[in-house]
Amino acid sequence: MTRNNGKSAPKVTARGIKNKVTALFELPREIVLNLPLITITGNEEISVENYKGVIEYSEERIRINTSCGVLRIEGRKLLLKQITAEMMTISGAVTRLEYLM
Image (tube, rainbow, N blue to C red):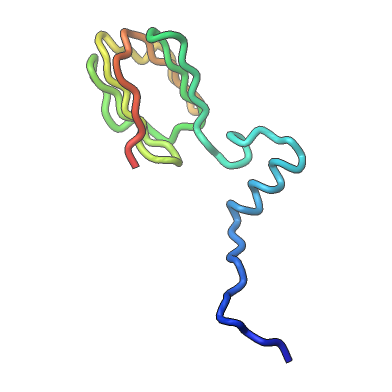
């Protein structure tokens, strides 16, 4: 017979298991966990991989849906330079980049 001292066993989640496997085998986290990979080149270009969709697009603001929330990019003369199912490249004068949860 086991005693329960009021503490419950820690919850094991699929994401927790994936994190451990990723670390153990040194796999790229963005691929295994479907996380966005954002590459910023100065304030002129941003590449986003593993995105889910474009919510808003104008020359001043682009909002992108990701598995972590909405990525909002603000600036001047923003342009979707390249877009595929896996990645997009945005060019222009980037003034703000933020995540909205």
